[in-house]
Amino acid sequence: MKKLFQKLLPKKNHFMGVDIGAYEIKAAEVKIIDGVPEVVALRRCPASPGVWTDELDEESLVLALEEIASPDLKEVITCIGGEKLVSRLTRLPRMSDRELETAARFEIEKFVPTPVDQLIIRYVRLDPEEEKERPTPKIKIFIPRTGETREISGSPEEGQNILLLAAPAATIYQYHSIFSRAGMVVTAIDLKAFALWRLFGRTEEECTAILDIGSKTSHLVLVKDGLIKFNRLLPAGGEILTGYISENLGVGPQEARQMKEEAAVTLDDQGDFSASRISRVLQEVLPEITRELERSLDYCVQENIAAKKLVLSGGTSKLTGLTGYLEDAFDLPVVIGIPSVEFSEPLTYDPAYAVAIGLALREACS
Image (cartoon, rainbow, N blue to C red; front, side, top):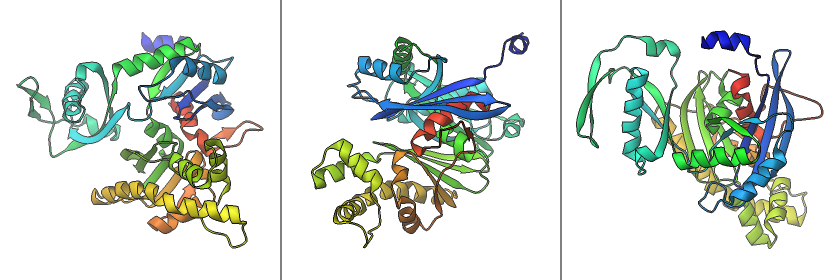
């Protein structure tokens, strides 16, 4: 019956992704034109104070969302950022969906202090479809909270890669309500890692690290053979650079952000005195970001997942000379990611919109 309704109902061809960052909200609209996804609109506006914190100003966020809303499209796809969403890659025995749901709750209890009945928990199988169809024996797991032992399908030797996700139910309901008050309907809450994978990793065969540098945090995703192998939120972002410039040069945050984007990481003898000062400031603070990235990449090497290339996105990736700086730091090819999607005139790709575009492509590429 469901398949029959899908055939009868008109297929959607217009999608919008909304990325709510700590300091800015980005929206991207994608339409399917002649069977090909095309970005038809990009909008941005300042975010309300306290996004992703307990000090969130809901009314300001509603007004900001109204500013970037589309007059033609009410349904949107968004994601939850910051530390509100907990994700963990793990390897579990192959099992049925019902059994995996139980095992996912058990695994979440191990590392999330919030009671599971206050969380919305989801899991994603990351392995190819054919792997989960193999017949498997039964094994037993012990659940400490209830003291019971359950028998599930699976084999500890032949497991499957699972991405576990958990977010406070109150946060999910809050964001559905905020979007609704702004005149929009949230059709899906996606993961930033999936948006980045959708944009840059689906066709990557060699092991590729994708780094989206946000304002307060950065997202690192490792992809190999088109599959996500590693995902981590790094507690460092471009605002570290902005704050450092503001403090050392005595300028306001907005001017500091503009100076950051216009400055070069490497010193240029032909540059003026001001540019050289900014460059020195950047070189003093950039190691703080690279250290976080280095820890994660080193861990991946220990897990036999060695990145062969680093792809950058996010507003800070536009910093002049950053790719060369990171190439020297990690001895890896570093490039600004360019999505293989069409853009309507006069739009051009801006790395700051990577997540928003990846979110909009969720349904367009399904």
